Image 1 (cartoon, helix red, strand yellow):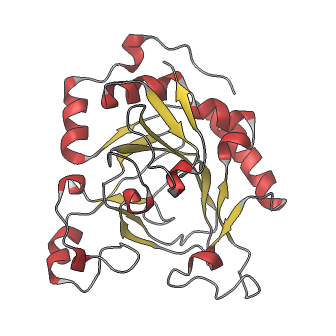
Image 2: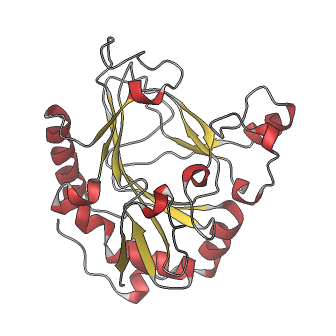
Length: 263
């Protein structure tokens, strides 16, 4: 994958951006990755989807509302994500370590950066008809680190809108105190809980175009709708943490190695 030469001035976050991340919990970088690199990833992802190249996660395995009841049911082999993206092909490996990503993360963490291979590390797909909606949740719900401060880097390989199940965020929700009874058994915000109604009202869609990138905090509530278009939506997601913030021994987060990155 070709990359654009990067200097410290190219990637330095402004004080306004640093403040926005602290207050809102996310940052959007427009046209961060060039079209040719995105098209290469799309081509590889499409080939691997057609070949059903493992490891895969199927919609039927998640059990979300509207998902096929089993792998044998109609639509049961609809892929939710291509797991293990870092080792799938050089284009994903290169993007995960891209200097434009690492330099910005270094500023946000204020320390050297590690890529975790235990979480995200995937190509996310949202298929028409069988691609299910995702309720309001925080990624940290199933991650186990000494501090709940990780960042997901989400790359749009094509346009992402409300029509095809684009990301929605509740700005500032990474700083909210949420009572246990506001969450269901999977740690999604309960739609029927009265205290959650005002939180839902603050949600906003973040529309993306090919090559746009979102950094968002692991405690930020986010969601995504169904894909009502005729084309598959494809994104790449990696998760990072400061190198001093270690996975808890014996947890799922410690089951795969970290990659220490330099910028």
